[in-house]
Length: 126
Image 1 (cartoon, rainbow, N blue to C red):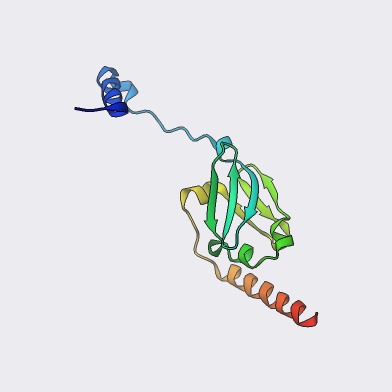
Image 2: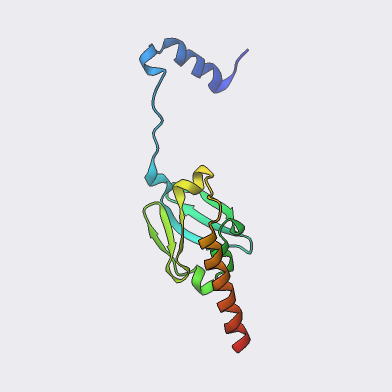
């Protein structure tokens, strides 16, 4: 015997006319808007407008992973994006929530290597 919501859903489908069976999905972008960003040792944690907290490994964002605490905390929220001006990098929430991570381009790898080299030079000078 069916219990709970499955039985209720089956009843709804039996009573529905064909025009209601093929509804388009609705994406509520405002629910996905970032409200705050914080970091653990291994993850970037993003608080969304609907109360969800999304954690993504920093290894997916090499420039952000290698950024200093000061650089990480200097971010701007805009719509569905988070942008770190100090490192000229950002996260697109639509892509992140969809699991779309682009392969790192050579230009991005070059930028990362330059940033790491600059940090090593500053550390060696102090």
